[in-house]
Length: 198
Length: 270
Image (tube, rainbow over all chains, first blue to last red):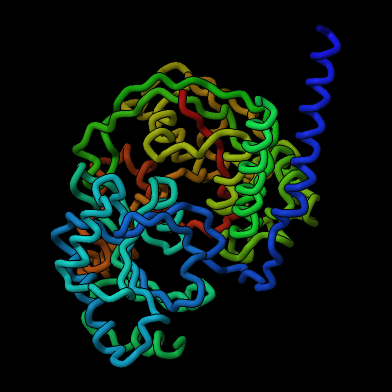
């Protein structure tokens, strides 16, 4: 009895050892030759969900010039104006390759802003090309991301937030290139900055 | 049968780890846990009247939590750096800290000359403070938790109505270079917390929930453009002047900022 148990145990150990070996060979991490910029937001490890319920990391946006704003869908005051500015930027960019640009709305109210709500928000605003995205994370991911953008926000009531109105432009390497603070319908400067990156 | 199931699981987990390692940057992934001997005190939940702006008419509810009895010291932060060299000043990533991060440290692993191992660590960004907290299995306190714990004087939980307590705080805020002294040289407050006032300002998890823009006399008109539903930060009375100073400090910070007299302590859920 004792002996059988022993060989059984040895077998298990051997298998585990083999497994580890196999793992070393087969799952060797691929060389990532692209050096990450030290200021890149692609270093953030937070998890995000899109309006299509797709789980992503920010680093999956690599290669796209990004225009980002933090808003929430039930906002009645500044967010519609911020979104309108995004729309105007898109219009003034004129002819651009939709593969190379992402207009990203980021929720500061991830509990309420479900993929359905985010999707509906994009639809209502006629943001229907693939260049439009709406993302949400968890509380910690949202707080961290807001801090990267220097966006301040505070929940005032379950349906109301105060927050800074900032539009941020990121290069295809995820490095902050330009920020427009405050609501101001003149978007020519930010459009120029985006054009420089394209 | 059993060993095979185990093997399969093994392959799954190890491949999965490898994948996330190659996808994600090292800075955030490789956080090594460290053991902290820091003593924590339990703060029983309760409520207080908010200090400033819209909050000043609001009862703030705080749940019970644990908080470090003193600010994180240079020695404690050094322990963290030894296990997490990606946070040393020569290696820290730009996204997480400005140029003055740990600038007064002699080298990556040598604390500032003018400070002691038991002095509070300063010149750390919010990202660094947060990483430290995670590495010891804790988090940063929220603004509300910090304020709630700081209502106590030596003998009572809430000394906010005592004029001499207000005087003590305002006086403590005038200490210059107190951050080079050692922690726990003063008496603790009612909860057993040391150095809540007059040594360092402290990072809070949600410091960026404090919105104060520029000088309100000059740019009050742009306030509503900068902040959706922005409230003016008006102190309700003089006793809140000290609180107003803290809020003004928080409102002026960005998460990558590092300041000579800004440190942190950690908190934890029950």
